[in-house]
Image 1: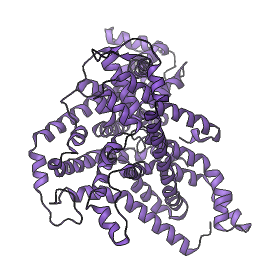
Image 2: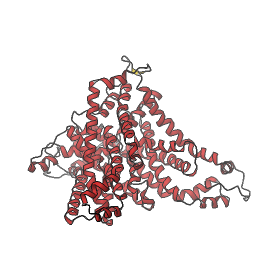
Image 3: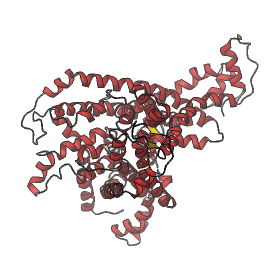
Image 4: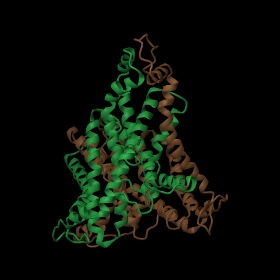
Length: 285
Length: 303
């Protein structure tokens, strides 16, 4: 479209302003983690490292961090196994109910978190009668993290050449040998990307977690939520928020680089809480 | 699909158990499929589908007022309460209003930036801008809501920025919830719109220009009609994500109650799971109705 120069400039300026709007609040959290003023007064009068040292020294923060890592690691491992199996089944075979299963794996992330949260809470407490603990959180997280692994694995499977596996079988390798020596190496980077996304997704999840975690247990996001309204903890909350930003963005950045060789990033960049579909949208030609 | 060749005479392998399983799997695709599918399908059905079904049933149960435990007495009371009680009606309307305003704000903000990225910026910049929009999408939802608590704080950034032009911070209120939710879900609107603009062929735009249409006319008569499914795809996200929210309301909403707040309160403090389940079905129902209404526009294929 032949836009005038000034129209282009105006659009450019608007775009810049919107990006500023997107980044400013996050930057503010980072700056405020050094702000000596406890009430986030702006502009900051002086800076301090006290909140960072207090956060590092805080047992609550360290425990919550350890819990978050534990939950994220175990649910990532479960999602890796289940997601890979599912991708192999759906990509390699056509069978009755395939589309239903395909929808099913997306559902936990497509429905609002509160629905998934209360449904699982109800399943654990009312139907099964198990007390909420870290394992209920892990089961919940694995359920909605599976989709990231599944998406990355199936995108890769569509592109890899099946004749290598046939050759392996012809040369006398069994089904398992072929999988370990031929299929898995080709899937490796896709699984790594999917695993990193699953880790990030689990690490900063809050809604489903609050519905499935036992009393007295805290992941890092739950710690933030329960300390948010305590004025003397507020500065430390800022520090933990910065940690959360870093720990969730770094794996995603890595995953994006890992899967940048895949077709238009199918799978990797889009799978947020709820929104893996965007990946497809954004990569549409 | 890949291993369908007939077993070939291979050098006789040692007959170990592992080998025998492998041979059986090699011979039967059905067995291989069962081996792959059983664990994940069982997980999804036993954990998730069972949970959703149980939620529906629980909404028809009640709570024993003495023991506080869920009692399996069948009743439509919960459903009746949440649909007829004025308190729940007010909360439903407020939640709907918030979701609609958030969606409109995101639409207005996302249109120019998506247009700029897709059609104006040159290709080198386009990739960079997309990443710039995507990155914060991944920052924790909680942190983003929390960031706005910082922005809106008394004496905080917004007051400081607004002071010279006479704008006040709305404080922690419904307006704050709308602003924060619009902020959090914005990338979900930008991405489908960007993809939508990408799909509009340049030749069509040029043809419109050659035929004498001014840019605004081209935008209205050529681009927008093609864009409608993408816009609706974006609204599905911003709308349904806002409907289910309660954390943002808790963090920046002051006393603002949304449907999610009620669900959360009834699971926790009020300990009335059946009522919470019934309330949770309001956003589900609204989303279903919305999806049903927009189904014909082809937006669902754009998700």
